[in-house]
Amino acid sequence: MSSTSSIRVRFAPSPTGMFHVGGARSALFNWVMAAQSGGTLVLRIEDTDASRNSPEWTEGIIRAMAWLGIDGGQYEGPYFQSANADKHAGAARTLIDAGRAYYCDCTRDDVIARTGDQHKGYDGFCRDRGLEPGPGRALRFRTPDEGQTTVVDLLRGKPVFENAVLEDFVIARADGSVTFLLANAVDDMSQGITHVVRGEEHLSNAPKQQLLWEALGGEPPVWAHVPVIVNEKRQKLSKRRDKVALEDYRDEGYLAEAMRNYLMLLGWAPSGDREIVPWEVIVEEFRIEDVNSSPAFFDEKKLRAFNGEYIRALAVEDFTAACLPFLEGAPFEVDMGVFAKLAPLAQTRVALLSEIVPMVDFAFLDEPPHDEQSWKKAMKGPAAEILAAAEDAYRDAPWEAGELKDRLERVGAEQGLKLGKTQAPVRVAATGRTVGLPLFESLEILGRERTLARIAAARAKLAAQPAS
Image 1 (cartoon, helix red, strand yellow):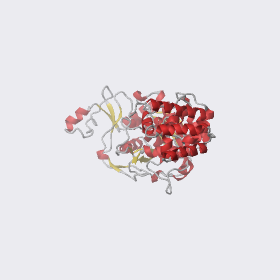
Image 2 (cartoon, one colour; image 1 turned 30 degrees about the horizontal axis):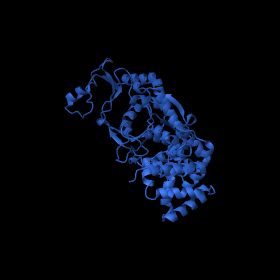
Image 3 (spheres, one colour; image 1 turned 180 degrees about the horizontal axis):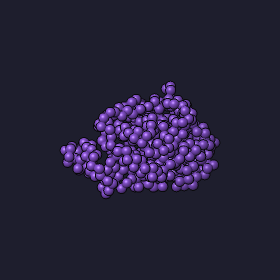
Image 4 (spheres, helix red, strand yellow; image 1 turned 60 degrees about the vertical axis):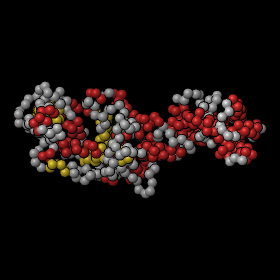
């Protein structure tokens, strides 16, 4: 890729009510290309579809990009495609006057009736009929009958398309509104776009757009069609079937830094045997030419592991700040002084920030949360004896995690049990669950009075249960 500052790369999402992770990856690829070259990232909102023209959806795109780190200072725009309607109409008239476009009143059924093939494209029937604009008449671009169109693609080389197999495609609907193909070409030309990075599903559109550029007197951009993103079944990610909205991951407690790192790896890899790398390294090493053209697997388990690594790398103060939105939505009041003691323990165990509430709730509730499965798993066998002995051992113990552990180990030894088995009923009595933060540090923070009260309550509940 050239390093000239004249490079202008564009990201042109359509408002759809959510920001697709595939779109987020394209935005990042474009952003990094612009940053590396000293060029400009251009944000253009494709809002000409009235059914998708919602200010809230557009704001959602801008917020999602800002969360990733691409805020208003990182791009030019946003521009709105709908604001260029006059330019689009002018381009359509230019093509008509040059004999490169014509009106057509054929329906799909008409084409099938003439060709006898429901899979065959438009047959050019109206090319020389000289129709004027009118109801039911779309405007089609007249593709060349001969020759080839070569697409220069930074990932795929120079794919060649035979012009003869490109149908005369629609560039304006019967109501006068232009299609994506013409609008994008006109906007790219007027905004000086030099490079376009987008999903490979648009590769088939590239020769059509190049023909439009050339017909309008422009030089086509350099293309980069990045690989499709697939799920575990190697199916293209679909919003009807898969979790694809970037906002959902954000709201679940993924860190922007982890998401950004992971998305950049969907088709590309940094040097060395590593995947979690600083953003500065990614910007330094990334080359769009090195992106693999094979489908990229979106592995949510791997993303989750990435997120856990990024969470553990935070300073504890930053981890606490990141948890605040989730703590504020908790169904109990959080004492931030107590949470400050729990935070270092929780930081080593959560993979998502949303996990923080069930991880620490025991410390803020009047009674431990009830988890039936945990209760049944832990409160069996010698559980009653363990709880009674633990209550006695803890009544006069120095209230420090190490001492609490030593005393419970001695309780277990008397029962012929290892610590893992011994601590299970104590953990469920005090915290409500079999899995959670380190037990003895949790008991130290919970305090003697509350710990002993919970053990006593668990003993009473066990005693009240009918014999099995």
